[in-house]
Image (cartoon, rainbow, N blue to C red; front, side, top):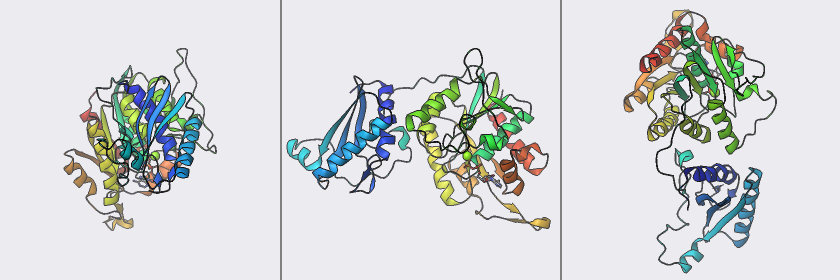
Length: 383
Ligand SMILES: Nc1ncnc2c1ncn2[C@@H]1O[C@H](COP(=O)(O)OP(=O)(O)O)[C@@H](O)[C@H]1O
Ligand SMILES: [Mg+2]
């Protein structure tokens, strides 16, 4: 077993996406989620891991699953040897009755909410990770949410635009490799070019330097990025883009707690995370997962933004709360963090997103909400 953290990361980066594609007929989950791939590591350019089966798996099952996994690992571009150590519960027990390892027949483990950091059954590497700062960028701010569709990209773009309106130098990085929305929301078409130092030049819109995978691929093209490639792209966006000088680099993270989030957190020092949620309980549960991930990795939480908090009825007839009331406040209280803002559900916000003209550009109550958010971020992270 090697202690090299990058060897662990490399193994996980290949095993997770490949294992996610192979179904276990017994638990009816992927072999990755069922926790059947353990002790992954890279040694002498060989990918080694345990493939743990229960007594219920027939010999045919095992052979088929090992083959399918190996094939997927190859498809993920793993160039070296693939060395699975096949363990079968009954056989292993018989052979090593005193084995201290837990029986592989244990019920499938529930997915760890922060599984991206240490895959099921896999050993997390210890020791501090050295974070490489981005020269000339004062504060890296991650905008995150537990699930999609809560308005994370909307908040990220409007926050960036509002900080720029306040006079700061701002960048916006779209780390959502699967569903980039920055080109549409910031009304950018075109491909970025590289400068003499081989750094990619971000594209400017509304005073914000922008970068998105959407600039590189066609709208119609399906983006089937694989785990390791996602990480590569996120790292490149952090370190190979000519961001400097910037006061704030706002990163629109994809939803969830997977590869891109982890790469981001380990890719550069994040000054703070902004958690976006809608008020209802189900969204809050997901937001909690995001919060826990950042906490566990020692990323400061700047606070919570509650989106779609209420709707103004036409003619000044009052407010309604289609997604419930007070969820953002409760979340902020529970985590002893700030409620940075509440954004109403408003047609202008949606249209602004779809038309590539963020609602915060137009002075008015919505712009004020986002200015308030920008001010809160600036207060937490002064430049
Ligand atoms: N406060 C809001 N009022 C109206 N529509 C909103 C609001 N926030 C987000 N939306 C819309 O909801 C959809 C999802 O938002 P988006 O920012 O893309 O979510 P995410 O990035 O979390 O997936 C978009 O069409 C967006 O315009
Ligand atoms: Mg989005």
